[in-house]
Each structure stands twice: as structure tokens, then as C-alpha cells.
Image (cartoon, rainbow, N blue to C red; front, side, top):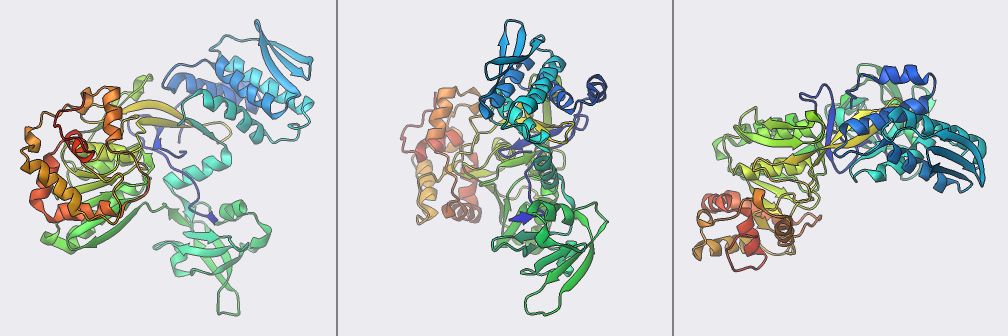
Length: 540
């Protein structure tokens, strides 16, 4: 399927000189380095050396832990060895040797381990030799060779650091920041581009219908274009024009429509409400998420008025996105205080993000749904609401991705998404590998079970004298790693949406006394009870 929506996700810009910060399981943009011109001058017209010098410098400056340019360069070049066994690179003493089969074809002095420019020049020389001596790689494009080298570099870093080539990076920027387009999605399942969705309030909404067949774009026949080329031709600068020719079912003549492109932001918030309860599902965090959610809250309050009972924020399956959007979303429900803090090796990575807008819901009861697919930005929001006693969490343990990725644009317009900082919740526990654990755990509970069963479990806790405020539950900030493992095992992460989650959320919001008791109950104590432990002692 080709789509104007194709791409991935990224993060915000606050007090970081334009840096992009990513909180996502997916790929994520602006570089903050001012030395790129010097790289170009030094290497002249050597795009490979310029690219890898920037990459090695960025990693040296921003990555969470130190790693040498030598380690990165040799790991990248080893990937070339794997791609073609006839070409090899070896560091022998203080010399880097390139081999064609068993014959040395070039010897270069090995730079100092942290010399980013020197090792970038080594990589560039290796790529030039590959073109001369490797039958398998001689015809590869520059981008293909860059990708192979980065495929060797990235595994030396953590699993959330990644490289995206120019095309993939362009899609990622479009997904997180929006793009100039008309607002359609195309389906190619039968080999011809068919309009499968038309977004509301977009240029296409008045001109194009679902099931229209795309025949031409600006008089270029669509069947002569690849899916990538179709997307590129439909997109353009906002306010520019594009003409499409369509074949409409039931109509003999072709339909031609000229539209003025607009800024298209992928929708991430869907809303459902009934009986005074508004349910907001947030699929990810892009540049429009917080505003869309704020608009939804305002609309729900207007429709329900004083009859509004509460809000469900569904973050299940949300892989994350922009850091600034996560803090903005949490701020919609919290009057004041810390949302999240970050710490890293780079001095600019140590920051504290606070609520700024005030609670737009005026303290309405709130339930947050999480599961094993809730990660990163989603975990920031859930943890902040939990730590501020602002919402009851329902579902399963979240993914546990608590690092921030800084997204840097490289000279080839690719992107290096680099792990830059760790995340800490308002109660100062580390999110990474820990995530959030809900008060009501629905792990291993079938969808056929009623919401009263977990609610009755809570009632039994209270009746047995284990009133939440009487529990001396240990602070999550003080839990050891083994205790965290035990806590998460008490409510295992599951990635499938459980219909019971929403049933239980509605049950809580319809019963103010039950909601109040649940809000006051420490997550650790309830996790112990829901996993079958009868003792009330905190985890050690």
C-alpha cells in the first residue's frame, strides 16, 4: 500500500537549539552541529567521508555512553566483508589494510581511536576500493553502500539507535511533522492505485471519493510510476497545486481535479463517547497529537457539560513519538509539577519537563489503559499521571522503553537516530526496562470475564482491612532491579488489546467511591494482590 501517510515518528524542540528528540519504538530532525561546513571544506567533494565524519562526531558527542570512532568504522567495514568475501579489511598493528582476496590493495595508517575525520577517510577509501575490486558491490549505489556500513555500525550501539537513508528519512519527517499533500491513501492490492481513504478537512475531501482509481498525476500516467514515485508526485510544498485524473466507478468519463496542497498531519487521536465518558485513543505522538486531544476534550466537555463522568486515555499499542508532545499531553491533565526528567552524558541531556497548561479537564476522574505495546512517550504520560495520583492505570505492564533518541540529519539527508538520555518519572524511578505497572492488572484474564471480577478483587482488599492509605508500599524509586522484575512478572506485558480493559475503565468511572479507592491504592500493593499474593508486604 502506498500512502501520503507513509513513514515513522519523532520528537520535540525545547531548550535544545532545534534538536529533535525521539521517544519511539519506531524510527524517527534537525542537527545542532555548526561544524558541518568545515567537514565539507576538509574533505572537498568526498560525500562518503563527509557523511561518516558527521556520524562519528555525532555519536562521540551525543551517544549515551562513550564509544570510539575506530570501533564504529571497523564494525561498519566488517559488514562490507560479509557482503563480498573477496574484499576484506584488517587493522594490523598501526595500519589498516584492504585486501582483494589474499592480495593487499591498499595500506593506510590507522588514525587515533577517537579521530572521527581520520576514520571517516578510511571508510571512504574502503568504499572506493570496493567499487574497484568487488564484483558484487561495484555497481551498488552510494546509498546502498552507506546502508551496508551503517548496518555494521548500529549493532555496536543500543537497539534503539538506527540509521535511515534519504528516502526513509523523508517519510519519517513527513509522518512526524506533516507534509504538503492532498490527504488520500492508495491501495495497490490489485496492482492499480485505488483510493482507500480520504481524510476529512483536506484538499481531497471535496474532490476525491473512496474507490476512485488514480489514472494520472499532472498528466503523467500512474501506471508508469512506482509507488514511491506516486507518493512523491502527490506531495509538494503546501499551497502548490497538483492535478489528478481519476476513474470513478459508475461514471464513464474520467474525472479531473486540480487541488492546492495543504499541510497534512497524520491523525493520531480518535474519540468515542457515551453516557458521559469520553474515550480517547492515541495511536502515537506526532506534531498534532496534543492539540487534537485538547480539541477532543473541549468538544466532550461542551457536549456533556456537567453530565461528564470521566475520561479514558487509551495508550495501548502506542509506540511513542515526540517528547514534547508527550509532555504537552500529560500537561492537559496535570495542574503543576514535573512530567518527566532526562539525564545523559551530553550536558544538554539533563533536563526537567514540567506541566505548563493546567488541567483542561478540571480534575475529572480519569483511567489510562496501557499494555505491552505502550512504550516511550506513552509511558511518560502514563507514569506522570500515575505518579501525580491523577489517573488509575488499567491493563498490563508496559513495554519499558525509557530512553530518548536524538535525531540528527546527515549530509545525505538521511537520519541518525541516536540514544541520548534516560528518562526518569516524577517519583524518580528509571522508566527503562521498568515501564509502568497498572493498578488493575488484566494479564491472563479472558475477554469474556466481567469488569466486576477485578472490581470485586479491589473491594475484597479494602474489606480485609488492607486500605490503600494504610499500606507502607515501598517507593518505586527505591526498588531494586530484582524487585522490578518481580513486580513486572506479577502483571506480565501483553500486546493484544483486552476488551476487559475498557469495561473495567467504564466501571471505575461510573462508581466514584470505587474510583477514589483505586486512585489511592499503590500499584505495587495491587499488583501483588492481583497476582495471587495474600501478603501485603512491599516487594524487596
